[in-house]
Image 1 (tube, rainbow, N blue to C red):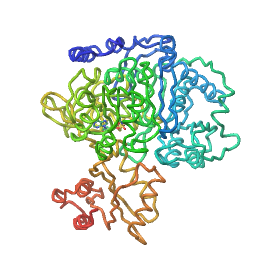
Image 2 (image 1 turned 120 degrees about the vertical axis):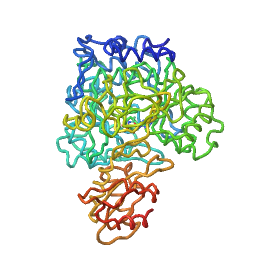
Image 3 (image 1 turned 135 degrees about the vertical axis):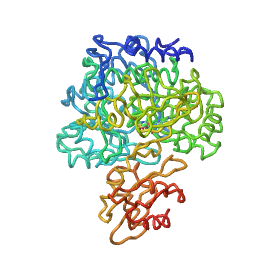
Image 4 (image 1 turned 60 degrees about the horizontal axis):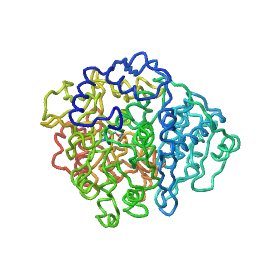
Length: 632
Ligand code: 7RM
């Protein structure tokens, strides 16, 4: 038994689960005892899903960085906290022990203070995958500033939208980021974003790529220069359990991403508890989560979960296929990785290169494999199991969301049963229910419906930044007194859960959440576009691809126009939202009330032409024939 809150057997899982439902407050108070508090809570939980209002560990005082750093110093000061592997395998990797990371974080926290950042300020972080990215998050948390990390694949326009929404006056960025053969000019993109964000007071720039940048006098400063003038003693700010820890923007079914808000204590406990239990982390293990810290997976399972557990966490700067498709396996071999956590899209992509990239790679250090982000197809699951796990590593299929803070449904590695394609069973504290179209709860097994959760867990989102009403309508009004996930789900005869995908207008492209309305808005920015409709289609590697139907006016030049439109999307959202297919049409299938019938467009994009269902209610049924003929 390595962590007092570690579940060691299926029996224990079952009894812990029961206890977490029968006495949630007692159960979570027991878990919370294992963390370090400045002051213990007065009350464990108060909640209602009407407002909604969820508060955990009320009156409790703490700082998450004391839990992630200070409390490990005595026994684990010399243990690696972060192992960093650069994009270029020729460059040296770096290790930061807990003492070193603590010192860096304190120093950079002082840099933030010296630059005017105070508790409650929003700090936007737009960096590549360097150890300093983790340092930046933790330094914010140390002084009570609220970080909002933006993934490097988002455009200047997306950054500006988020900066304005969060009213973030401080930015931490890099000159550039190395990703595979590319060098992304992060600072230049920030400069573009700031043209419309004159409220930004300070940009702190970490030098990574030596890409030439223009530094604006009075606004921009270098990370390294600032660090020279900063002391390395920085007492942690005392935070309330429910003070904001971070905002992370995520896509939904409307055109505008929402700032999901997580708070200090509940998020910390959820990230650490799920990290230890899902992956069955043992002290000394090297944990390699391949996500980017710009997504929730990186927040919870590269930074906060592992560090709160005193674990050793890998940060990989590059991509799975650079310099070749053997890179992950080379990293596993080189750093003796014990836990590998990646996305089905990465597995499918690497699978397509065959087993040659695995030759001469020693993967025997691996104990546990994990997947996240989208449903995993059986073929990919078995390839992962056989070729990477050599048939001896449990695979955890972890279902969760930005909004949930950490894993909600997953098997626990080697402790609870796995089933290919299934996330399997809920973690203690998680009470899933399935709903039918009429809003009735579906009881029993061998059923499917819309997935909701009927009781709060410590890591649930608290609000959407600056717009609580939006949080309520998005998650808590579809079904009364339930949190609605937006996912469809099947519960099999044994009570195991299988997530079948989104039931709203949200796409999952390579594990990235993208709203169809967002992409449509971006396409419509092109001056030649009259109207557009975006749907997903099955894509062999990405899971889902983006299919756009576009009504275009003026000079249509086929592929040239397509490229132009794709470029517009890249400019407005970023390269991750670029449509895979653009079909020009003269009309869209609409109901008499003017609503686009996406179901029909989806079927056509999927190639299921014969199953379009009833089209007689359409304003102009002939348009469907034209669209079918022009399918790409
Ligand atoms: C962690 C993350 C959330 C959406 C979610 C699902 C899908 C995530 C799985 C999955 C099937 C899984 N956060 N999803 N994990 N679907 N099996 N194991 O991905 O906010 O970016 O996306 O991703 O649709 O609602 S996210």
